[in-house]
Image (cartoon, rainbow, N blue to C red; front, side, top):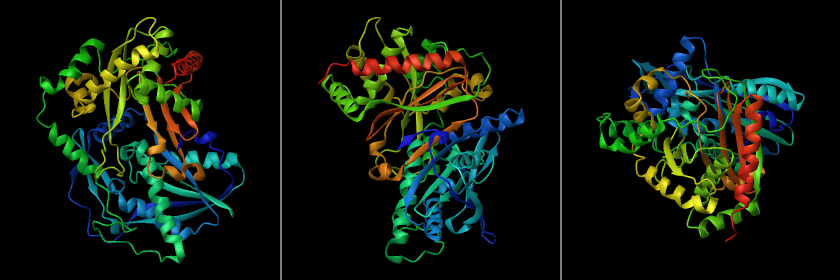
Length: 473
């Protein structure tokens, strides 16, 4: 699954259809109020504050993929509804609670999809404009937090959906694509009858077990940290990082030409850094050096930054998936903790020299993953936590995902499955490294300044050179 701007997705023209999630009248009412996860609570309160000062920062996490042949619109609608039925986080109605966030969950038989035909889109440019506008309709402060649709052609159909980050993350996007595709194939195989709206049971529309609830996961995570105070020993790792760095947010070490306190229009691009053969050889070289590919990429980025004038101590924030391999393995939600990581990079160190340090640093960080970043932030930097509505400055951030391991990955190439991430404004630079069957790619979003453009180009060129200079296994 390639992560790419919708502007670069090259989706052909066709007939536009939408399905809007609506509550059914006459329902008995939502389930009892529940607390939400750390990420959700902070994300929602930030959106509230931004709206109150008339400075909203908008974003979306969306996807598009192809269905071959003439589409069955009824089956597609049922497949999209299956997605909402499977994941209760999509059916939750979120409500503020005195600086926190609660939610009420509609049962599967209390929601439906309302179909709207929106007419023809006659050029690829019209399709791009239509999708971008539709993607942006999701709003953190408004229900529903998912919108779905399709661009229908006689020979194929592009299916799309867009979610607010409140209910999704990158892995969730692949899970949703797989869920919709699997349900659609099941519904259209041998003329299968479309199901009626199901009652709330442990099974879902397609007969499979209901995935674990992200809302329950978030509640459990908060219960585990409820009694934590700023002097808790579980915060020792986080506290030491905070003291050495001066904040839980490590600054991006190169100049981007941005002014403090200002947001800039985003520049988004995706490019391939290594071919499939090159990334395979790089992974083998990492293993031969006693490390894993992901830490080789982190070490390589640290070396590239050091060679371009970065500091001797590499510090970054690293998102990690919290799902595990059990009941949450294919659940939608914001299952991400963000861990601080740091290690030394010598002035003339190569990747092979730094890889062991990156591996050791990762082990230390993972040992403290039971503490959530939002909780540590609130306890160790309460004033900053209360006042920030976005990251305080350009933050050094490392993210890698092997898309070949995602649910339904064997169909991604044939489906032209794409993830589309967008923010209305930014003050720094973000790189999402991801591997597909075609190689190693990076999706970049950075502030639109001349300096940031130059810095990003220099960094990616140097990073690629460092990766290809690692001695072969």
